[in-house]
Image (cartoon, rainbow, N blue to C red; front, side, top):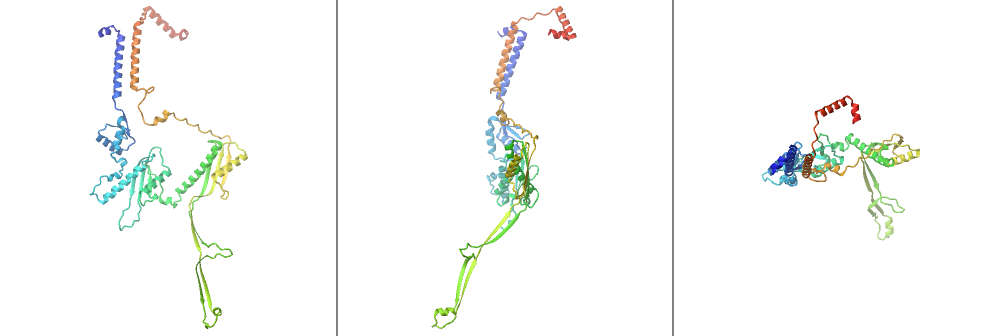
Length: 474
């Protein structure tokens, strides 16, 4: 039966049938490979070579297949085992980031010397601080070094513990001043006897993110004073710009502030005498702490009366007073404002009354004072307004999720790629069969004679020589 079916087919139908069978077999093989292949997902990413080596060693011990990507900084495993393998690896307390914590003392060796115990304790402290600082989103890697002074019974404790921290930031990330101060206070609070200024932080380029103790105490007239001046000016300029932008619109005004600060640190001590409140009709003299009265009598006959005898004696009355004392010590920190100069430019035409109103608004916003001699200048420059930048369109939900976790590709309205491939193959087979049937039904066109071929060739050559006639025919 099959031989008869095959013999009845023309040469073109046989070729089409063979091609269809081969395509079906190939599609079946691709679908089987797609269904049976292992799909890998990211287990850990953005690793250092040391961390990658430690995790790979643990995966090989667990006999878990894995793949390396991004030059060894990314480790991938089967998507169905990602969470299970991650929990197993993290349960092993691997020394990631080159640091170990207090789990170092889980298996204590009783024969360990006191020096080794101190070194392990220092390593554990450094590791715990490393893990805590690594929780910041801007930090990629961190190294913590502690300098602990030696302690002894007869040793005078003069040195304080110190800490040196090296942070590696992620590309495009920066640590704000508040974050740097927070890291300093965190490390200082974790170490007994350590002061905040004893914690030094540098970045991966060796640039110091913290200042030396002399600079923080005001002994250096350089960087800290300039930073304080810049912060004051930026804060006041931002306040003025916010008010003007809400009044005239974004991009229609410019504000600048110049501040003169007093960097002198003054300590003043005042001592005054405090008298008790005076009674009505009396002068305040102080507080009576002791009163004594003594009478000295002269010798007189017994028959003399007492009143007469008293006239011949002497008396003494003593009072001791004590007044209160008040001592005040006033310390003025450097950075007080001496003078302020504010300049505002408005890209609109304003009348004199409007300029005066804007000037008063700017002066009140910046906190200007006539006693200090502060000045404010408002100018309007009509015709120089620059349009505000157009708002960027918000990304669609699909675009917003593009940076998230990669998922398996979905075709069409959510169908699996294998189903789509099989459906397309079936459509191709049906179309091939339809074309073959139509070809068998349609009669073959009659062949041209030699005279007709020569006439057609001459007509084509004539059209080539005279293209305009060919255009008229078309």
